[in-house]
Image (cartoon, rainbow, N blue to C red; front, side, top):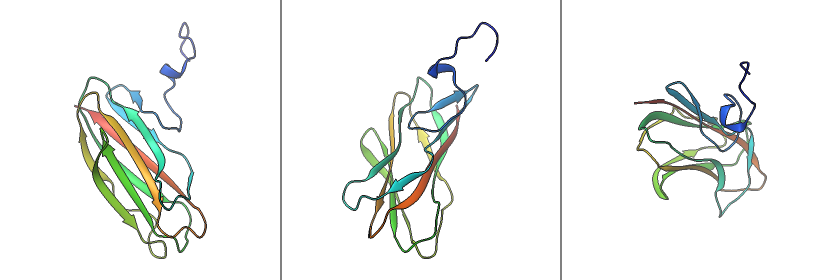
Length: 132
């Protein structure tokens, strides 16, 4: 940390977790490795509220390991589902990012669901963007 700046969660510039991180005009959130086990209730991977600026960004979901489980991922803005993405467990690990424009003061939530959860499947969600 720079001299004279106390360590606090508000000024940490890298890490994983549910929250959105700001570095100058860039923003990012990395879920880290999350086991997707639920077949009826989606598992929260990222959840944050944006600040006073509009953000243009990309959400990308990945499956860490091969497996037979089919996965579904969802993006919600203020509890409204705006995108659904399916990953075929036998063939795919990830898809290209989904472009999103996020208005100020918006609750963003990214979740995952294991369609045929004989076993859990490790996955990640990433969000990267630019403040407009």
